[in-house]
Length: 146
Image 1 (tube, rainbow, N blue to C red):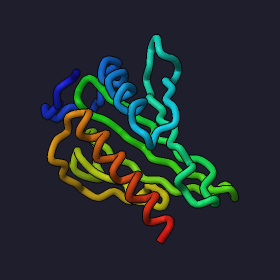
Image 2 (tube, rainbow, N blue to C red):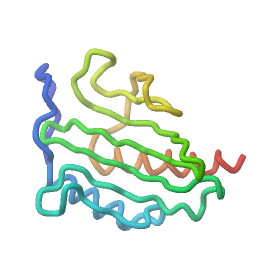
Image 3 (cartoon, rainbow, N blue to C red):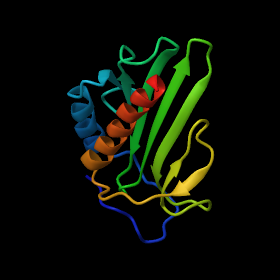
């Protein structure tokens, strides 16, 4: 697994396939996830897709998915996307990468995932990050019923 890159580099580096496979096993074991897939495929994964089971959601939610990109530099993007039965989208994103708009570690807020705010996480270890995101998804499901 790649470590953090704090050398001021502007590149996220190549995909960290070992970490993507680790995260796939973690998501595949989570009850909130119905299935996982790699893009473009398992031989050379660049993106891990975690399809969220929509059974616990209100009927207006058609699909929910996590798109996970992890890089050998320790940078990452975890994108959560919901679509409704009327094709509306609700999305947000946890990012760690070099950029000009925020600190290296930031969150793009819902509902459209465009506004970024700096965040701190207790750990940027891949399992800790994905666990933080899964808890946020579970909180989102609860809030949809409020």
